[in-house]
Amino acid sequence: MLRVENLHVHYGGIHALKGISLEVPEGKIITLIGANGAGKSTTLRTICGLVEKSDGKIFYRERDISSLDTRERTMEGLVMVPEGRRIFPNLTVYENLQLGSFMRTDEAGINKDLQWVYELFPILEERREQKAGTLSGGEQQMLAVGRALMSRPKLLLMDEPSLGLAPLLVKEIFEIIEEIKNQGTTILLIEQNAYAALNIADYAYVLETGKISMKGPGRDLLNNDEVRKAYLGG
Amino acid sequence: MSLSIFLQNIANGLSLGSLYALIAIGYTMVYGILRLINFAHGDIFMLSTYFVFYGILIFSLPWWLSFIIAIILTAFTGMLTERIAYRPLRKAPKISLLISAIGVSFFLENAGVVVFSGIPKSFARPELFDTMLIFKDIRISTINIVSFIISIIFLMALLYIVYKTKTGLAMRAISVDVETSKLMAIDVNKTISITFGIGSALAAVGGVLWALKYPQIFPFMGIIPGLKAFIAAVVGGIGNIPGAMLGGFILGLTEIMLVGFMPELSGYRDAFAFLILILILLFKPDGLLGKNVQEKV
Image 1 (spheres, rainbow over the protein chains, first blue to last red):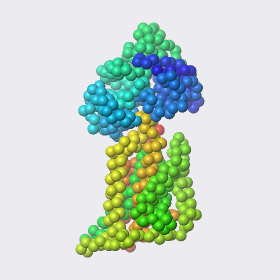
Image 2 (image 1 turned 90 degrees about the vertical axis):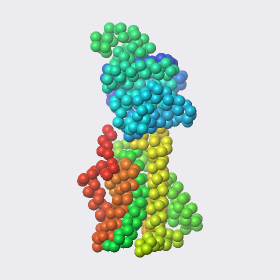
Image 3 (image 1 turned 120 degrees about the vertical axis):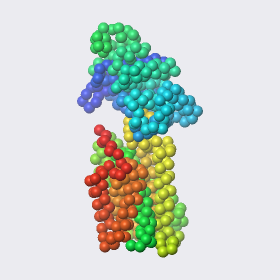
Image 4 (image 1 turned 135 degrees about the vertical axis):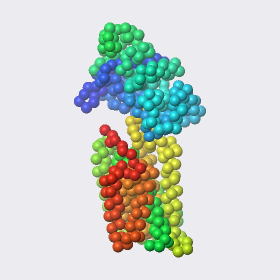
């Protein structure tokens, strides 16, 4: 579904990504783990067009999407849940969800997806008229995910969905991620919580200072000594 | 001051205030979405009066039709200035944008002198607006009532657009977070363009009503009303739409009351607006309805 080939990104003088290649097959959860500053977020932001690449190719559904801007990529179903949730605090929960379906015109489909989002996150329905800025951190993350689902993604890019959440909520978010996958959405997940991410991932890449240092099925990396040492605390 | 004169002053103040409110909206909306004080806004206001003037004089259109055409033309002019002078600077530092706005302002004023000539032209006021309405001993000119009602209608329409439509939702989203708005597949350029169009259209409504009230137009006429509307926007809390409306009415009422209560100070009415600005900046810099927004880094 998504194929990244030899991706390079420069930020000013910094060579942030040094030739990354990865593949996200349809219907799978692929994860990209790595330490802070390894280039995980940059990779996602480049895939959705918020950051410009200096070299390499990005193919989405067999098509080179270099010429599309962020908006057009979103309309093609390449949807991102940004890091730090980035909900609109001054808008209500419902308005945030509406923004997720901003480019859609199929009223019936939008309503159906809204019901699904409310099923996944009942708290959002309860707080629909509340300003999103008044939600707790966990609820805001749910809103960010729900909002992305309202775009009816084909490929969902998730940037650190568990960041700053209590352990119980982390578990819940990961269950939701699996549920989204079971509904037929492909997921590319970025996580610092390597244990949880590797557990649900079909395939994983380890990113180290702008390069892929290891890759393999999630379970295999979970049992890999090097990965255990570096990312799972021994 | 007798009660009837007081009420008469209230009526005048509301009518002037509604004009400031209409113009202030343009400042506050553009600031909300681009963090730009669009100093050319007062000159866009000026242009609208010339559009009406030429519509009636040269094309001999009926006044109401030339009002409508002027509002549409002004909206397009506002969108054009954004396209030419602001959009290319989207990624530039904010100060470049501000300098560009000042440039547009000078350009419009001086182009106005060249094209329309600097000599003030008298604006043909349709007879309908020349009458006085008399309630017992209160005399209110029709134009004051008309401008108040028309302003309220347009302000309501604006609130509807901003808070009840998809376009308004996009505007409110962009004003908080441009990057995430792109992730929502919002067309940022188009929305900014619409914002300029709406702001300029409201300035045009204000301009036409202004010219009916003070029927003399000249290329620099936008400066003082523009500055006062800017002050109104700051008083209400820049970036906040109901705030701009409130600020406009406060400014209009206090200005008229100053002249009414202390006629000997009436020469200072423009200075008085700046006094209000200074007081607000000293004691409530976020404006009456504004929230303290952290500068985006």
